[in-house]
Amino acid sequence: MMDLGQPKETGNRAATTRRRFLALTGGAALSGVSGCTSVFGGSSLETLSVAYKPIFPFLQYLVMNERGYLDDIGPDVESTNFANQGLNIVSAYSDGDVDIAFIGITPAIRMKHQGLPGKVTAANQTGGFVVLTTEPFADLWNDRGAEAFEAFREQEGRPFKFSTFPKGSVANVLLRHWLEEELGVGTDPVEIENLAGAGPVRRALLSGNADGTLIMEPIPTALEAEDAPFSRLTTSGSFMDGAPGGIMFMHDRLWDENPAVARSVLEQHVRATELITERPEDAAAAVSAALGDRLSTDVATRAVQSDASNYVSDPRAIRNGTAVCIQRMRELGQLSDPVEPDTVLEPSLYQDVSE
Image 1 (cartoon, rainbow, N blue to C red):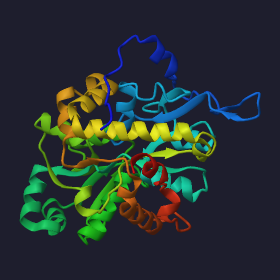
Image 2 (cartoon, one colour):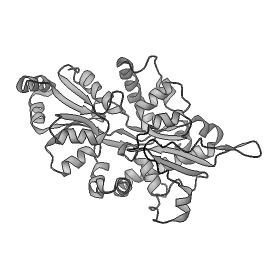
Image 3 (cartoon, rainbow, N blue to C red):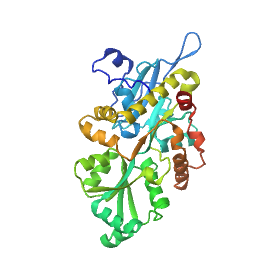
Image 4 (spheres, rainbow, N blue to C red):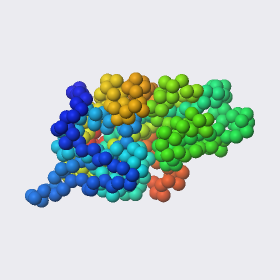
């Protein structure tokens, strides 16, 4: 078992120097393309650029950062938090400014559909999403099952309203798959509202503007902690084998030109997964530190231990779910050409580290 290490000490000058966070505001741009050419003509990676958001599907990165796992991999690490910045990780990656992107599986599929260099070298989780509805609807669901949506429309004179993430997001694709393939009711008896982020979805639920959602942890656990009147119906892992959540997408140039660094990153990802699995309270401290007052360590610990999520590193764990997401995206008109799962997923680095 790996040494899982201790959290970084605040004010550690060496760690601060090695991991330079970019203070982005508004439409500020990234600081340029990573890597450079040495005077000897070879490739020398001086800076590793990592893009992420501080959310549960990217928990491994939050652990790696909080505990300093990437401090000694060789290059300096420039980590850019894209939350609430009006910036898009995929656009930054497409511009060549990012070596490693922590994103959802559906953006990764679209990137490969566009022919961008890189692959999913690690999964972060399987599952991780919860179907959450108002308590009255949950009671109706317990009595009627999938027929509850038609029964709701008859009782309320309107369709059941789901608020979730934008079209093409992991949450949106999973919701449509659940309604169409698992339940067989399709989207006709419901309304699906696409909102930009967990905050707007949460507000829609609490204000009564939505009847339910499919959303990732820790929102369901946080609502439960507040005694909000919502109930869990199911989880994405219950209706999709290998349901993908967040992933780590690595640029081809990293493992082509700097294989030792690429391997080190995978080693630290596996190390973070071990900590999440074996010491969830320490992993919770990492995400709580990243989110500050918005999420207490107690609620974060419960969310990490939720049965909705299974934290993994092996990209093969999400292969079946990735294939289903590709199929659903094709049916929704989001991909003009088929994409093979093996074009998206690259397990060789994980196999090299773990086997």
